[in-house]
Length: 382
Image (cartoon, rainbow, N blue to C red; front, side, top):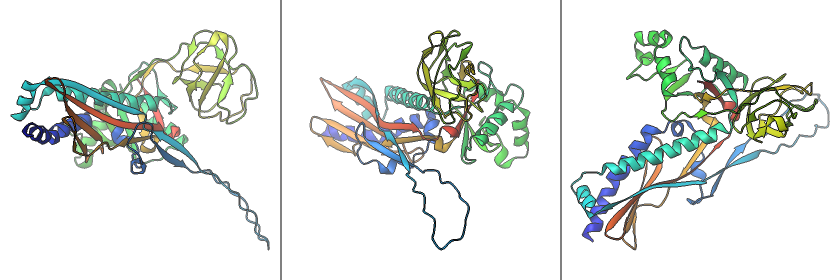
């Protein structure tokens, strides 16, 4: 029983250490809308949380009459966020390692396990985001902010046209883009006056209507190589999200590519239909067409590979993390502890179990995410 007490006293320290590591590494988890976590009814894999999406309401002229006009019924929809990600970062230690813990020397290996789990969560959120947002500013392969803020101002303009809400907005940059931004006089001048405009500890903070963050996990999207791709028919209507390609041109169009279609306003993200352009085929995308395609030879242009720096509103991405088992002792010399981080709300569990003359340590987490509003994100390509 003494060994169990020693291990139990360790759990709070170990979990707090893991949460601190996660908080340092996860940018998107701080941005995403987490208001729906309270609706989680089961902390198990594949449980769902439904996010309500209101239906649009049309206006009409008012004409006084003795008989009121019929009211048009609306049917709100919902988007299910599935808790489909359950990951752990396990490692084993012998009794010598436990003795080190007993002397309050927390094993550095635990920090490495937390780092691995943190990186996976961050990458998973980026992958989900890549499948849903479609706004695009900047130039693929060219790091933004080398000379001015035009890439951000263009992204802001596009976001406004896409009806992205004004607040709260965030800019998440990779290391190179952030380094360029920090060197801009426009930001440095803001720091001369003190107050909220000061750039503290190399962090840009809130500028020009957005909070600027840096993440080492900003990914790079490798685009397809399509050239001279065209649609195969005229007359695709407004709202259509799937078109057929002409069997002409060269190269490929890939899922998550950002494309422009001749005659359309804005850009689109490919959601399905990896295609070899020379063989034709179909592609699907978000959002739907905003103009009727007038010609069967309307050109499709694929944006070049780019670092996915992004301007993002909180409601673009919903993230739900389920709380796992509360602190308890389980038969078989297994102990578990759970803590909710006050800053990010992350639920992280540490489990310690006795095996053959050693202890297995495992950090795990259960979560799901979904892009709810694709209009609420614009890439600032790098």
